[in-house]
Length: 67
Length: 254
Image 1 (cartoon, rainbow over the protein chains, first blue to last red):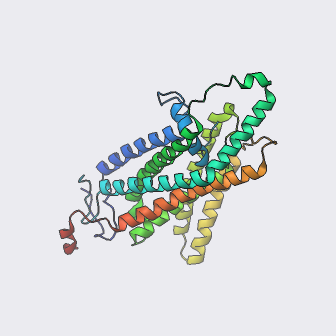
Image 2 (tube, chains in turn purple, green):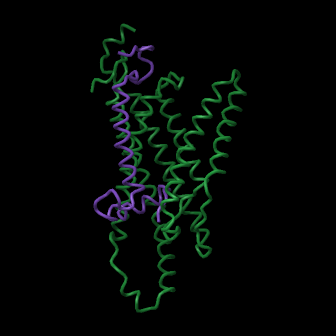
Image 3 (cartoon, each protein chain N blue to C red):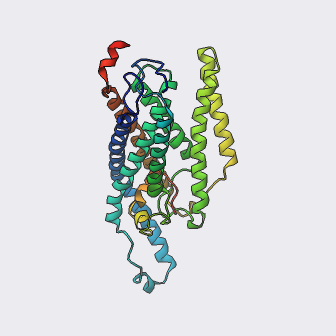
């Protein structure tokens, strides 16, 4: 188990291997959502271009490239 | 989730939950901003596009225009879905970054740690890409270059984050206050200049597109992203400041 070097003042758990793997999985999931919202051209979403078109204005206003 | 091993630290699960919540709030408020100030500009840009295509085509074929996949009203509602989901995703990544980096931030204040991370994200993920690849309204942009533009955009986001990291690393090598400041600026600028120079320039705005509309669209897009990251940082800071420790009885031992 990793040692806690500082008592309470720093508000995060100490970084363990398990935490790191969980964090990695979470970030991967979040990046998938980001991809679907901002970068998918209908390749991953099985709805064709529907999701792309639905979130089209958001893409432009969030500053990501769009066709 | 008992991931925590610190004596009174909240768990990653607790922080993640707060990040997702802060992200949802930030995304919806950014959506509200974009809806209020951005949608009129998107409408105007689409009107420009349609006027151009009408002029290019003979009159009879304009009647045969196919039904759009999503109506304009649908897209305006979809805006909130987009910014909400985007906010949630960024909130989750933000909370993860906070969990992993918090102990290296060298501030005793959790709120200040949240603010500085959000500020770094605003600078690296929004500011640096914005200058190199300013966002464009609909009717601007060649569909044939979308892959190249997407890769270049993602590259500049990474470079923006590296630049912020370089600034932090550089300033920590210096002993005095003014030298730390100068080193931070230097580290940041060197990475950004190299990144800007290496990545291709993209200029696809047609000369016929109204410049005042382009300018006001880009400003609204920047505003949307500033709202997103500002609210995310503030909301996460507020939620973290109120996060109860999972085992408060161990605090007394510290």
